[in-house]
Image 1 (cartoon, helix red, strand yellow):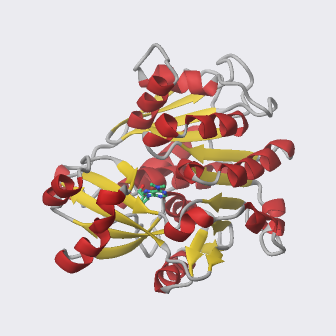
Image 2: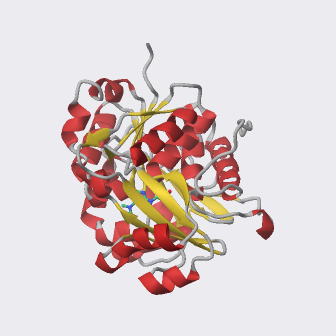
Length: 355
Ligand code: 26A
């Protein structure tokens, strides 16, 4: 049996989503468009939501969302996802959602623990994410070496890790990154949130040399620039700087793909623009290359939770199929647009062809 081509790893979370959440931002000191780990004062939000709000429960976890998006464009049995869950009902819900959308769950189950949750507070087109990782941060590197998981890693040709995972799991991330680099496979990472370059700078620095494709958005790029003293706040320049960082596997160029919501997506490559390219950009493409986004009307947008993840997964799925960078960006844009027109990080079924 041919193995899964994409091995993804992150924090499996169940999203607890509410709309018109202005009072919650105020009460818990959350920013309208941010992602944070809940501090002690914010840990009350989950019970508060259950007691006092109309909650929509939906499968989340940034890398898990991206895995489902990649599965959307790939043939069956292409994507496997790992992360740690508890032995509870929430984990069952996540397994069911993955199963329906073509992602094989290869969870580590932590007995007696609860599955992580993310409070998703929607205000207008903004989403504020406040996460309690629970079992997710108990993921052990030994899971990757287990008889069930190790062969999946050997068989995979592409890896996707959420930057969020670096809050606790840099050792496991490095294991996949080094494996990919040594075997000249493709290792991809998402910056995930501004607080990752800011507060997990050392962890990010350890992993970046192995990254073949780096995903992020404009505020994460800006946070990287600030944390590393780059003398620019221009997103294209930051993308170029990230692409040019040292690389362990020099045989593969690095692509840096930065989305900007409804504004253009920027792709920078580490290759000089006149070289014969391995990264599927044509030689006459500018570097960085700018890809405009088709804007949706305001009333078409339900919420923006998960749009960036769906973009990354859609891009990667198309890329795995051997599509060009331009086609991969278009697949990403299509899935990002599809996601914002649904509640939470969900895609449309029956499937729509986006390639
Ligand atoms: C470590 N943190 C904070 C997180 C997350 C997270 N996924 C992994 N780790 N905080 C929020 N998310 C997920 O991001 C998605 C939107 O991009 C949410 O579960 C949400 O589905």
